[in-house]
Structure formats: structure tokens, C-alpha cells
Length: 155
Image (cartoon, rainbow, N blue to C red; front, side, top):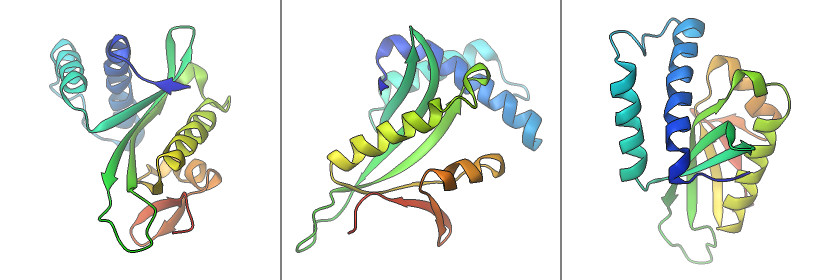
């Protein structure tokens, strides 16, 4: 479990393409309709190089990225007696098919929650797909308001 580096960007782009294909199949979406794979991979890789808003966490299996999750830290406005500095948005959660149901995603999410807690993040939220709601619930998320939240501190 670690943060991604530039040498991972090609695999992350390929995983995003596969994720789009699975969502097309599972949910009847149209992510790949008319899309050029080579152009998309180049665009996604450039996005990763240029955008510093995301922490990208990966589960690495000897150079193969088994699972990846993107986290955007959102700074909180300081308040009296407030210790939390951020809330965080979890997105683009994906585990390669051959690594699913082996606890890798759960271990990566635990790593992320520990890392975010250490940097004074108050909560982690996500918008799960229908197929992943139970996984999020098993990992400490609950349906609050209109988003799934996972409190990381008591604040």
C-alpha cells in the first residue's frame, strides 16, 4: 500500500478504461461509446501529471497495481477549538478483476483512512455505485444526508 508515482500513470489510465467498460456493462452507461482508447489513455495520463488535487493510493503487487483509489483533500475553514484540517472525497475506486474478493480493496481503504486521520482529516465521503454500497457500509461508511460519509474523528 502506497501513494502512486509517475511510473504508475500508464497502469492507472488502463484501469480507468477497464472501469469505464465495466460500468457500461453493469449499469448500461456509455463511457466508451465513440471513445478512442489511445487518445483517452494519453489524456488521462496527462491529467495525472498536471493535476495535484488528488492523492492516488495504490495496492502494488510486485509492480502490478491491483487496486487504486483517488482522494481529494478539501481544506476546512479554521474554527475555534477545531482540530480537523480537511474533509476528503474518495473517488475512482477500482480493483482489477483478478484481485477482487481477496481483501485488497479493504486493506487499501484502511491504509487511506489511517493516512487521512494522521493528517487531521475529519471525514471521508464517497458516492458509491449500487454494486458497492455494501462494501462501503462494511468499511465504516453510512448514508448521511445525500452522501456516504465515514467519520474519521469525533469532531
